[in-house]
Length: 383
Image 1 (cartoon, rainbow, N blue to C red):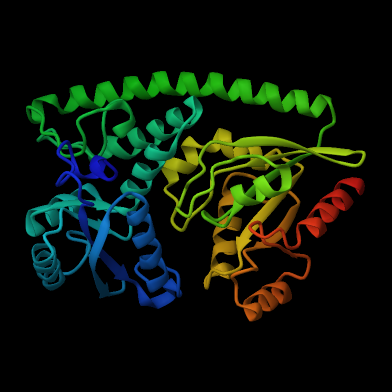
Image 2: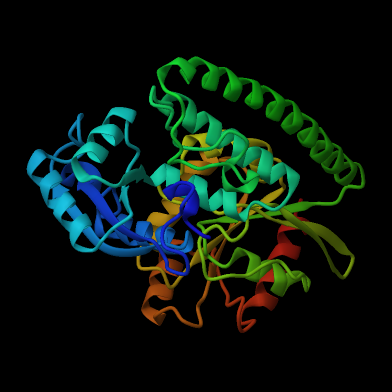
């Protein structure tokens, strides 16, 4: 059942989507319109929750310069949160931000339901969507990195030994024998992480051998990158006739899909990669670094933007930030404005004005695809 990893072994009432309440701190000063706790960030958190099979019933937001170090929100707002959770019979509270172990513990004691943060939610979605061996290894490494500092003396943790719900473990809500087992749990997780890193290293070597073969054959490479749900997989399908999974959910694609395109005398590969999101957990960036190397080692980054998104400019900034973090900031970039079939025309005009070299397309209808192919051919001919 989707969302059960966050709720523990029971996973809520069978046949029903578990109910969640969101909680956020909007740090007005310098946070911007898309900072933590803002409406843009909260809307995205709602979509993340929906992707993970949860129903968001309410949201509690507090405006303050910084989160409360003990309970994330102030004491009065904690009472308001507890009342909201009771009113809607919530099984979960999700914070728009990353909570410390102490904040989780204190909120759970005051609110009376399981509390998780944005990072745990994203990790859960990744655990559900990883399909390949490499993707599953990377997700589990990220889960362990997140879990280790959050192990508690009562035996509860924020993940599962052995890879989240994929491994069929007992879940976040499991209770162990207590503080005596804490060091044993830590040691077990560290040993598991060591084995996973060895597996990840071998898988990365295989990926590197594939890259080397392409380089020897002088086949240029394009990495499709961009914000999650921008239509990257749909664009890959349109360009190559591939059948990559396309869903209107966040993080539908975690495992790279590589396809070859031949246009006249030119042949190049196109790789679909994992999408980015605001406040992408650093554990995931670290764990997926070998996969993200597909972007940093490509000849061209095709940055796909959802032109119908009201915060498209902020999404572009977020993607550029992650690309710089993974060492891909200097890779030549072609900006592709997707979904022009549903985007307000004035938004597309504004984006084209901000990025004159961008190519407007619709992966759904095929509009602009011929121009995109021609632009790709021109860019590689100049190399």
